[in-house]
Length: 194
Image (cartoon, rainbow, N blue to C red; front, top):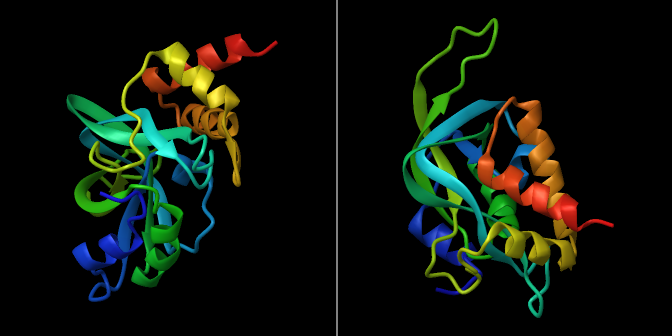
């Protein structure tokens, strides 16, 4: 599958018939909202884990030297916390371009996180972008130190790859969320710094 998924997402999953859609962000979408939204709140999905296994040819790297960004991998018993944004279908014109490097949209149950003063519980259906191993930009697993070293040397039009990792780690801390994979790579990255 090509790493440019814009037209594929439009063909596979038209959203024009909906008034609004909940979008689940688990990576840069947590801290970088360059789109309009109607509402946002913390949420989680089950059965998926964040992994720095996807290449970034267009944001945190280049076609010649892709960076490493997150995708989700199926993991029994896993819980992935992120932010959910209620958006109108036309927002996906922008989002499909932003997430075009190997990511396909799919619907998944979103579970709302309990917040102090908020009695709302339950779940809804939402859209998540996922990059599977069959896309051309997929890099796959590596050790924490290998991933950290790759991130340390990568840079693209959106800035240094390390910025992506560090901002995400801080955003997760701000949500009181611990992600061992993200924090282990952050530790290795910081250990590489002079």
